Image 1 (cartoon, one colour):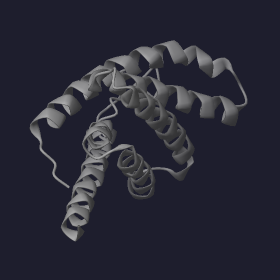
Image 2 (tube, helix red, strand yellow; image 1 turned 120 degrees about the horizontal axis):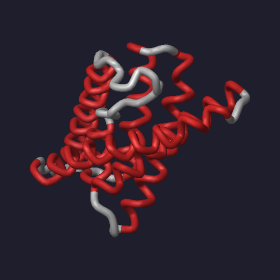
Image 3 (spheres, rainbow, N blue to C red; image 1 turned 180 degrees about the vertical axis):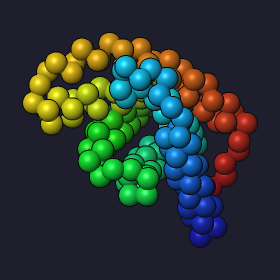
Image 4 (cartoon, helix red, strand yellow; image 1 turned 180 degrees about the horizontal axis):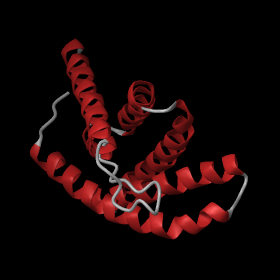
Length: 167
């Protein structure tokens, strides 16, 4: 029993580390579309989707929230915490719900995560800036969330199939 718990903690530690590294790497990549702020790949979600499928939803929530807080503390701006947190929570809720149905692939789950992450960030921006004009960005962010979600889902799917996790 203790060995299984130790293995699970080790896998989760590796997943948090990977998510943080991918977040840092992504922060070093110049924006693809500077005229539309907020468009990113969401590379850290590779680790989150992997953990969601290999360990479960509670572990995926833990990995995602730890990554948000740790990356904000180490590399980010505390003002961006609300954006990241809203995006992560909404994204996780959608991915968990879709995965629980058993009807969707890792790619579809990842796409929903990417789209909802962007929706959460726009919602926070609208609240903080007290305007609905930011909703004009939403179609662009939905397209980018879909494209990024497909890429992340493909990569996570490969890892899910090729990496065996015994906890």
